[in-house]
Length: 468
Image 1: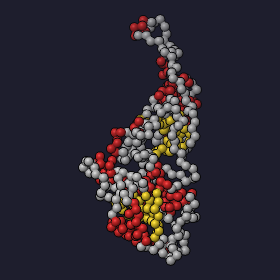
Image 2 (image 1 turned 180 degrees about the horizontal axis):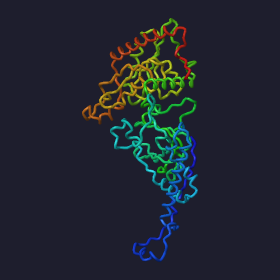
Image 3 (image 1 turned 90 degrees about the vertical axis):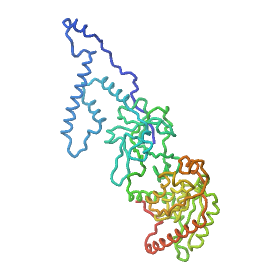
Image 4 (image 1 turned 120 degrees about the horizontal axis):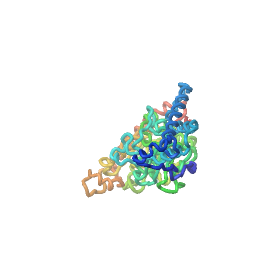
């Protein structure tokens, strides 16, 4: 993204003259001694006549323009900026100082509102509340909700933002302004800017990926406003698109199409569509089933990782064609993760951002999720995000195991204060449950792959894609 210095009128004063003021008695006293002139240079009437003339010329020009505009042409009435320009171009009799004064008033009248409206903190996920709460989204059936600036709904105004607090969005603010009357001292940023919001932080891979992904060989550029000198200095965008619900509003079919495209683009980018995948069958013609145990270190990791891995290794060894891999997302590059997921039929992993990788598996692949103690009662709807992603991306979420044991909380266990203790807890092991769960999922996947192989004879396998 390129930045350009603002072209602004930084005049601090209005430049308007002052008119002599006399009281009523003084005017009566000299009523017969002079002839009052309605066009006195310093008279307030001058402003009235000038403005009246401007308005009249504008109305006449607008009527003339409408009469000469074909009915099929889009109406220009939404763009006040264009109308203002016509007034300037056609009103030869308008006083330029008056126009500059009006423009200066418009600059100073731009109103900044809190980016996060704390009045709606308890309803952050509902409708248009909390984030840019004065604005409504555009929405076409089946498509994602969004806002675009400038647009007809913004009356041609651009989006401006102020403040760069990374912890509390209520300390930052936004406003709308016309291009010719941007706020004083604003920095104007050219090009298209994508503005995304969710009420988590973007250090987490899922929080960022849900908003933006590129597969053209370039890293997404995240604007840090380094070129803006003052935290309180406004920044205005030439074009901007705001997404405050990420995929919100998209139909399931459109979501699956989007995930199919991302999966395909990622594989092509990493050359996985041509190499690096397991064969569909082994030498005996048995379907190959890939299990990946995607592990975490630290919060929400398995308390006894060796025991858990041993259970899945044992169940995998009982099934001909089963292959198991243990991986850690933190030490794999992007393309290494794409390659691992491309041959994974069953993803076994604790709840966490690494589960985002599920969309890189083939459709109908399976996911097994694990939680530490306390999450079901206290974690809120966010704990179900990977069930949602599984549905959106064409995967099969095979349920979740929730550890009934864990660290003790000094408060009643349904007290929300306990979540600070349970959130990063370790996950235990239930050998009997894990073994039976693994067998059931393996049998289901094997049956599905047998059916798929039968239907794929003499057709192209799913390892390739055209990214259409």
